[in-house]
Length: 232
Image 1 (spheres, rainbow, N blue to C red):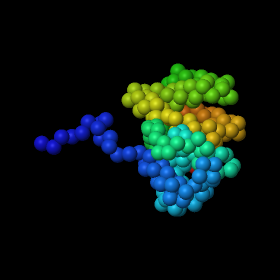
Image 2: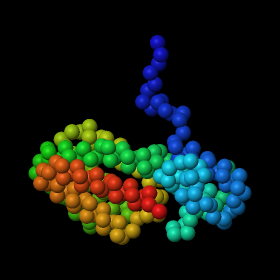
Image 3: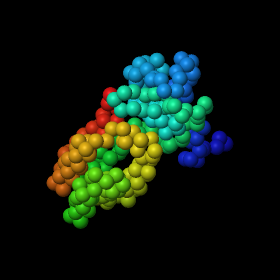
Image 4: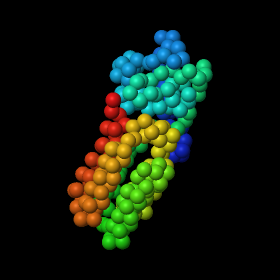
């Protein structure tokens, strides 16, 4: 009888897409003899040369930056690092940010809708506490991250389905080093304020038991984050 792989075995030998693209970028650097301190082609040109999407390319560049191979300079471009070491290992950092966002968009939109349908008064109060916590700590990185997590988990708890809470906890745990490095490049005060507004809109829809509105507000929030991380 054919053995069915355990969940942690399935796909274990398949490399993450950003690692595959990272290898292609490293091959291009060697093939075109791009020296330390020199600029790589633009993201648009790189994506065309390598035949990959802009989002996959961006994840790969962030992975290479974490590994010390390249340096991403906002408003200037991507450069081969002056301290780059030959054959530097690209770190394994879990799913790429856009993979996580795609999963969140599929799942959290419906979680918000379920919360709007089933949330008790105490569950709504818990979501509001998380919103106020994020507003209080919006300029503090660690506090903001914790409050953001609390907000999304409070929505999952409002569904009354503990499995949903587990799913959201898992998705949150996948926001690894790639996510945080990407966020570091694109997070601004304007974007933090927009996130606060997004969360207020989601909360208002859930508190009003507006199922369609909660779905729309969560989708708009995650779509905006995706656009922010993939812009340029």
